[in-house]
Image (cartoon, rainbow, N blue to C red; front, side, top):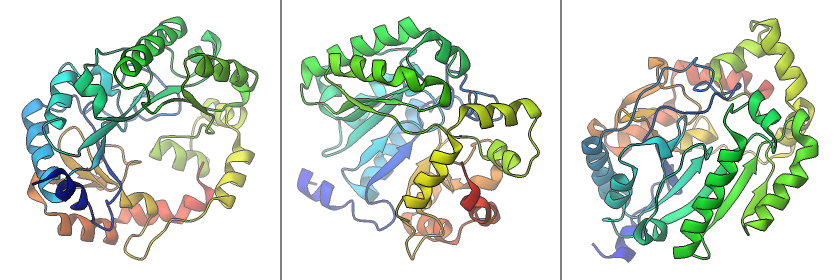
Length: 308
């Protein structure tokens, strides 16, 4: 198969853009509003190299050269065989990958690895140790050092690489955002300030229903820019399409156990969100199951109007 044919094969309606392929179901950060960080999500460990090879081969057969996002609930740079996994991706024409990292750890990139990197995103909760103590609970100085090192490595091979910081906007870090932007500009990388939100299905639903602890409710109310988030959601165009119950269900999400999930918001340890093993399902079956949804999807859609 030529590279052009491989790229053109990526034409499935629901998954024409990219696939989330989680290589690490664990994380070194302890983000307060994340189901992995606050331990409401049970770790699924690292994807085994053999399983990764099988999943990758099937993805290429079905989609050709497509972008893989090697993360969802975990920290991909923790994978002990990270370089080997990327070398497997490089075997397939037209296939690229994206990484989102907290930069609490680092990896060494080769020229080949950098050549297939679609983007590298650094997720930050602010620009001070105080902000890190509230959310990620990582060493802020180490994070900055790792960011500098990774940018230098990758830009040394690919000067035009898409690298940027997502500094999540909380009420307590608003005065730090300009310093974060200056840091990004000093490295010649992008800078964005998306609003932070509850990235935990059960806790989000619990907050809406008034069933979380008083401490959790207080931190949501005090730390998150709730009014701005709601206004942003009201203004955002709805991407719901005819063949899917929900716009995020258009994303094919495969966890580190090789299971297909209902969406990227689904906690992996909850069987209500599991559609089946990717290696045992054909793409038509996955599309039908996602379009139909599961009872938990209907529950989610009922309170999505109040989501954070």
